[in-house]
Length: 281
Image (tube, rainbow, N blue to C red; front, side):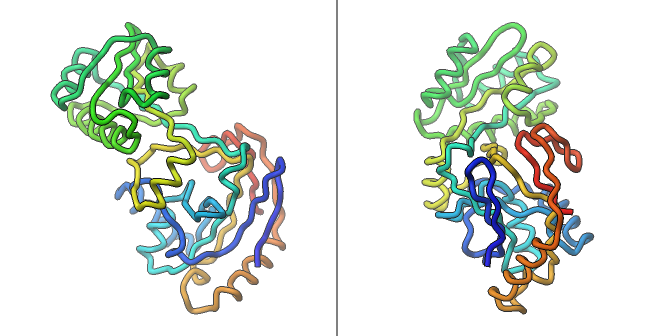
C-alpha cells in the first residue's frame, strides 16, 4: 500500500521500506548522527521521510536518518519515492564559505597537500569545474584561484580532496559553513568561498550502485515538493508487525492528516526550503 499525491506532474509516493533495500550516496558525520538519534528517541518517531529514487532506491536526502534508524535497531524506514529522472528534480551543490583564513594561508595549505594553485577568473573556474579539470576554486575579493590535482574527470576523487582540504583549513582555525551556490557567492568580499563541482544524476546513481559514497555535503537535491512532519511512530519500524500491515496503517495514518502547502522559500523548523513544503498536520 502506498500514499500518493502529485505535484507539477511528478508523483510522490510515501511508504515504509526495509532499510536493507536502500543505498546511501554520502558519508555519515558522527556528530550529526548522534544529534539525530537523540531527537528520534525523544520524539519516539521519525518526523520526515527519506527521499529515494523509486527505481534504484538510492537515497537522495536523509542519509543520517537511515543510519540513525539502523543504530536504533530498526529494520524499516519511511520513504518518499520519486522519479529521479524527472526533469523537475534538480541537483546542486554546497559551496563552502570559509572564514578566518587569508588568501596566502589558503595557498600554503593547498600546496602542503600536494595540490596546485592557478589564478583564473570566476567564469573560467566554473567552466573548469564543469569539465572536471579542477578539484575546487577559491574566490575572494581579490580574485579567484583554481585548485588542481588528482585524476581529471574523477568527481568522487575530487570530493575526497575537498574533504581533505576542509579538514586542513579547520585545523588552521578556519570556520566553514555550507551554503547554496548563489547565497555563498553573495558573501564574496566579506569572506572566502570554496566553489566545488556539481555532481550529475547519473554519477550519483552509478557510484551509489557500485557501493561508493561521496564526502558529506556533496549533493543538494531539489524536488518540486517535500513532505515533512509525517511523524511515523518508531514502533512501526521494527520487524514486529508484517510489512504489508505497517504500510496499511501508514496509509491510513496519512489519509487522516491535513496537508498544509507552504510556498518555496518558506522556513520550517529553522530550515529554509527552496521547494514547496507539504506539512502534515
